[in-house]
Length: 123
Image (cartoon, rainbow, N blue to C red; front, side, top):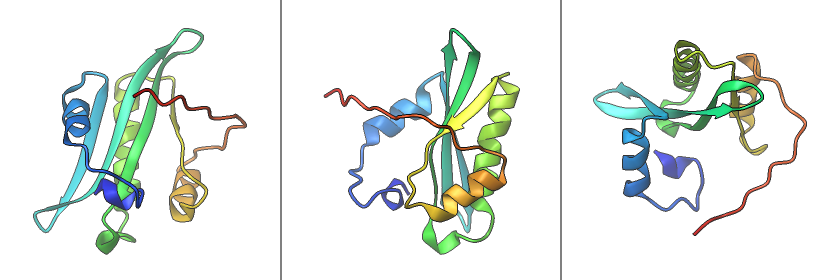
């Protein structure tokens, strides 16, 4: 499903295996018609000035199954996992091009945060 997030996605089974087995990460999936049709991941980190924070990544729904509430359901599962883990807040990023996803997150109560996002790619 991750190829639906980005047309430049390169399949990385090692990264998926690491996410599935890592203690700080929880991967949710939704199955319909005996097929994985949606997935989302929440990872946890401790921020010294705040406490435990959840970060949602890679929420994706198979295009054939969009419009059925699966994105909301997966996102809600991630938020519930954060609440169950006693996170103080949940964060996520979503590219502006993902108009529907951004509308979904805002409808769930997520608020935009004024920030600069910096990335240093480590090889």
